[in-house]
Every structure is written in structure tokens, then in C-alpha cells.
Length: 113
Length: 111
Image 1: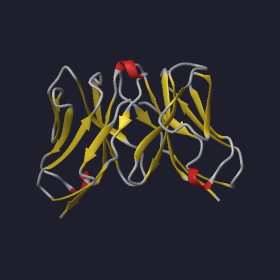
Image 2 (image 1 turned 180 degrees about the vertical axis):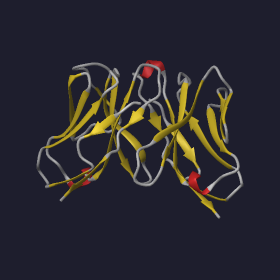
Image 3 (image 1 turned 60 degrees about the vertical axis):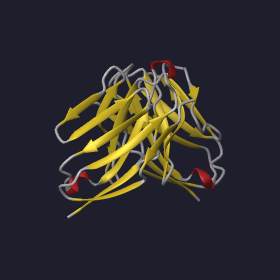
């Protein structure tokens, strides 16, 4: 089955700096890669996703890049703000996998003032 | 707006009890999922269902079962609760090839 590895497990940045979180996946059939943000005590919420026919996608301060050859994808947050502090999860799925997502183990991002 | 509702936010049960966690979604989604979330381990899939009365094992199904008698409702059952099943349980639903939405979670403590 699919295996998703996520790094780093914790990340601390100064407000205004950029943050990058990286994930690798094992199943070359995976074609959908969402990112979720989970604030303390709340549900994971989708912040951005990318499909395998696209190499990069941006939404304001957030971008995701995908390298299908190397089987890795990354989340980039620019101009970080204190409200970006949360746990971020990457995930991967394929249409042949019963629509199930396999998640990484999460990155605790802390944005310091 | 998609709404995935879990019946309890907090639940305390005793070892050996049969425990039911309920999840309801209001968007006619085909696919529903149960995860448990533990520190450092991320979100691990217990069971999922892609249609009424259909179920598939996820990565950690041992000690759990599920029921999906109606499309909108997906129940997770702990047949005989044990202390190592103390965790946060998250339900999610997803239409085919579309983003997945989570409920607020149930924090279950087994004493």
C-alpha cells in the first residue's frame, strides 16, 4: 500500500519568514495530494490540494509543488503569520485505492513573533 | 457547506465495554472514513466505506468494526474496549475524486 513520509516533524520560523514542509510517497499510481491544517482542538481542514497533472499550485501565501518523477511534494508558506501556527498534514491517494487518503505524520509549525 | 457531525466530543468508557461512535454527513457523499489520531503517528485509517453496506479495512482495523446501513451514517464499533484504544477518533466523508471533510472528532478515554 501507499506510504507517505513527512519532514520535519517540528518547524519554528520567525514571523515573515517562509516555511517549507516536504513529503514523499511510495505509490506511483497516486494522483491526488491534499494538505490539511489542524489548529489546536479543531478538525483538520483542507488548505490546498494538487493533482498529478499539475506541477505547482498557488493560493495567496500558500503554494504546493509536485515532482512526480521523484515522488515528492512540498508545501510552501510565505510571509508567515502567528495564525499559521498549527499542525500540517500531507496526504496522497489514487483513484484505484478506494479513494482513501494516506496521511503523513504531521508537522508542528510554530511562527514566533 | 459540508457538515460532518460526530455524536460526541468527549466519551469515557470502561475496559470491556462495547462502544459505538456515530458519524453523520449531510452531503450525500459516497465515501466515509474513520481515523484515529495519536501524537507523533498522524492520522491512521481504521475502516472506510464507499457505499451503503460496503466496508473495507484500513491500516489498523484490529479491535474495531463498522456499520453503514444508510448512506449518511457510518458507525465505528469497539467490540470490547481496551485502554490502548484511548485516542482521538475522526470521521471524514468525501465524494468521488473530491476533497475530504472531517468531523470535529471524539476524544475517547477507556478506563
